[in-house]
Image 1 (tube, rainbow, N blue to C red):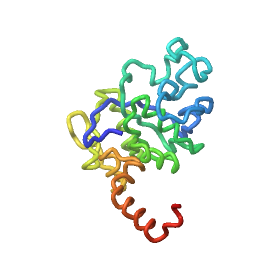
Image 2 (image 1 turned 45 degrees about the vertical axis):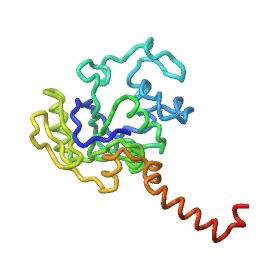
Image 3 (image 1 turned 90 degrees about the horizontal axis):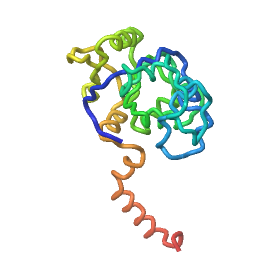
Image 4 (image 1 turned 30 degrees about the vertical axis):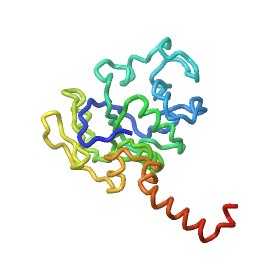
Length: 211
């Protein structure tokens, strides 16, 4: 996971409410437990005109030109803005992996499903909750300059001229993890010396357990 404090990028405006995890990454692609390779099938049923399945050559599939991700002006965008209750449905982490593998660094919405929201931070994807008014403003900006800055250190979103759009809340621990590029394993490794010392202490107290 990458560390960043200020991130400038284009936005993809997904004007849909209650987007569930099966729409983010359909169930037929969940066979792999690797975190990579899901990007080409992100929003598969909306992005393509045929039915996708693992192993299919996506470069040869018919594209839905009306879907926002396929429009030229939004190619290369790294920030997804969307509507209420994003990520509802199943608890699959693959939904977060697919967004990241596509290149999404942050998702901004008025609200998220709880499990999806937690999965985002477990994997280093910055999920930001903002007001309905802010979402409307961001959607409007996608029709204009379409560049914003996310300043995670100062918990603010700014336009391309660095004028404040809004501030946002984030738990200090989650903020630290995203800023430092830490997942749960990385956090544990910060305490490897203490863990090793504890293991040695247990071995000394109960050596028969380790025979």
